[in-house]
Length: 219
Length: 219
Image (tube, rainbow over all chains, first blue to last red; front, side, top):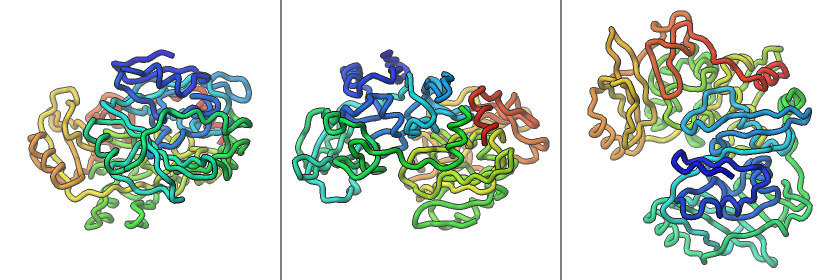
């Protein structure tokens, strides 16, 4: 893993764990585009599934990706230009492609600064609430028959303090959810939900539209 | 043009003019992801060039696009789901594809609310300054041998007032820049710059990377 703190990005091999990234960033005041939750496949798995728990546009936080296509071609898409997209974007279709475009090898992730962070949970009522300030990550997890709403936020000190006060939950530690997905994490009714999907042990990829299949065959 | 004000999006034919969109939004309190500047090719041209003057990630503001591929296939990518990307993203590679993936037919654009707006200019020093508050759009235009920095911002009343006070420029009207690009707008040293490119009359598309050519051939 290579941290470029001044330029606020991280180059991570696909197999890097999500909590491993958090450990690498300790003390830097920088945060990655995922919550402190370990999931199957680490950074690479996260990219293939299009992120986890974000309340923002996740693909724009992936500045670059190197992947091996189904035909064995190694494609390097995007780069480390943080501010702008120069067009010809192959990073964004790869993010959330559920393996159809190939296997990730390395990712360049945008980091964002924060003075403080908070990871909280409270009972989940079945729907995701509108929160102010809006936490950067929100998900629901079933534990022993009960559902909990988890929220993780980072940012300026005052904003994180206001989040703590308004969310009214209990503080939690980083989670390892890999044991909940021994057969892999896919889409389907399961023990985990975020704003995009329900996630299931051994769940599947959503059916791809036909033009996307063409793209997959071309690469 | 079909305005869905409650859901904050607009469906526009590719040939719609950018100022035409502004007129359609008058009184709605909603703003499109481009400044009040008419450019060659209207909405379709804007999509092909990957936006204009934005200081944010433009592709995420394009919720969907229908386009005709070089082989004549009509592809409908994305849709009107505002909050999230469900994976399999063909919208983002189309945005900024400079015609390589085909011709746009229709676009679904995210709109954002604003209570006020301001369009200002002042002399351009040759580099784009860091501004606070950061305007949503920033570009430099050569007029009669002199370069001007143009900034357009919309948002909450107080924020727009702070932008006016800090930018210290003169107010300007919507611009029609089409006469400056009679042979079409492309990349190259010319009379217009934004944070991504210099724009030239009769300018070219940036050279596409090889995997993107493969994608173009597949569609």
